[in-house]
Amino acid sequence: MPRTIALPSPAATRRLATRVAKGLRPGDVLALVGPLGAGKTTFVRALVEALGGDPAEVVSPTFVLATRYAAGCRIPLVHVDAYRLEGAEEFRNLGHEMLFPADSATVIEWADRVRDALPSRTVRIEMQPSGRSSRTARIGGPAARVSILFGLGRRGS
Ligand SMILES: Nc1ncnc2c1ncn2[C@@H]1O[C@H](COP(=O)(O)OP(=O)(O)OP(=O)(O)O)[C@@H](O)[C@H]1O
Ligand SMILES: [Mg+2]
Image 1 (cartoon, rainbow, N blue to C red):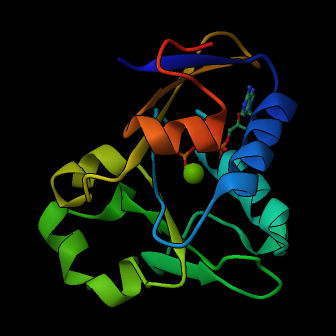
Image 2: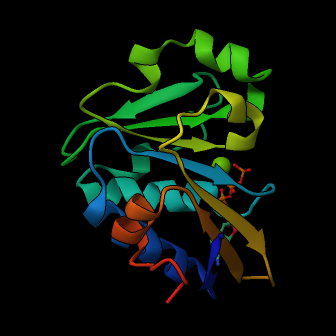
């Protein structure tokens, strides 16, 4: 059962990312889903900053399909933008070592395009516009990780 979080401003989205960063550990996989301008990169930038990295390094990876932010980061973060990927097979071809290094967490924009290649431990964050500057995030995935990363119980308290 997905749980829902209101994000009434870009600042609220950044605060959510800061919260998630606190509980993040190597091996975590975050799947970001939502239309153009939903706030996926905004979330990733704040996540990198909260991990200790430089948020200015975070751009939508136009020329590279996957980037790894490590400098200053408590946990290195692999950032994939699946927008330009053909699908799960092209994603898999990037290689497990590039996508899911053992010492890193991974965050994927447009993750539904590669859904079939995502591990079962993946936590899904679906961002939907609900107004000019508001978004709604629906959170799904293994209850234990969702609880630690988002402070959400099984019934969405
Ligand atoms: N509540 C909100 N949360 C996040 N961003 C918001 C919110 N309200 C407005 N915005 C604005 O929406 C834009 C989101 O852009 P962003 O690049 O993060 O989206 P994206 O989902 O990564 O898009 P793309 O699919 O093109 O990569 C930013 O300009 C941001 O300021
Ligand atoms: Mg983006």
